[in-house]
Length: 62
Image (cartoon, rainbow, N blue to C red; front, side, top):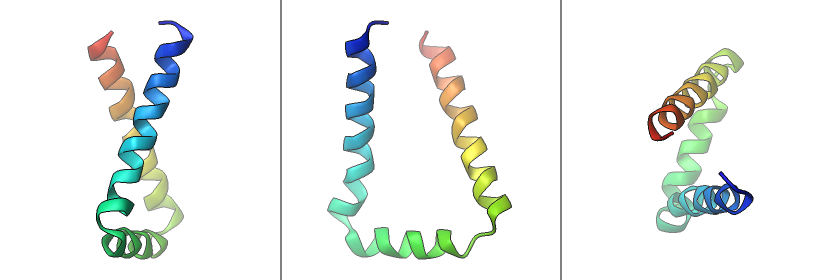
């Protein structure tokens, strides 16, 4: 993997992250209001799940 692959992956991440606020700003705002209501432990759990899913996806691709 070279440096350009990393930059392409980061660019795609930004594209996907921008889709929901662009398509549905009201839904995006509502989602963040719900996230603010979660406890720190719940947020950490979702963060851990995201990390694990990302690592598993990378392992499958590589």
